[in-house]
Amino acid sequence: MSSRRLPPVWLFAGMGVVVVALFSWLTYQNWTNDLALADRGVETTARVTDVGSKGRVRVEFTTADGRQVSTLVGQGDEADGTRAGDTIPIAYDPQNPTSEVRDTRVPENHRLAWFTTGITLFALVSVPIATWHLAREHRRRSGVLRP
Image (tube, rainbow, N blue to C red; front, side):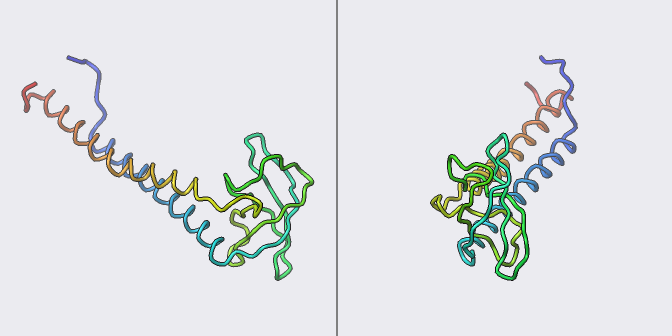
């Protein structure tokens, strides 16, 4: 028998709800941005201002209405070999130009959106199961259930 102390069921379940809510929000944001770029994306050119250590590409561009915008290219939506100072073709959402843009040299993909969808679905299934097992172990240790 383990002498390890178990977390309270309410705390574990509450943290699980927070995790599911966070990944649900991330999934919604990713899909909303991807679909907005596909439906109403406007093509223009942008100047690459920075390529971060993890490959994140920051660009500056001017919108059709003349606003100067600085934002990131979506993860997985950047072409290999992009360097600071390059001029690249992008698609941006005219309703929200500061959200992530897509490098139009790269085929449209939804890798990050599908990834967060998978994590969200996994959490939706695993958190209740793990909470149930934790509650069962609490009952077993308190003598309500036999081993």
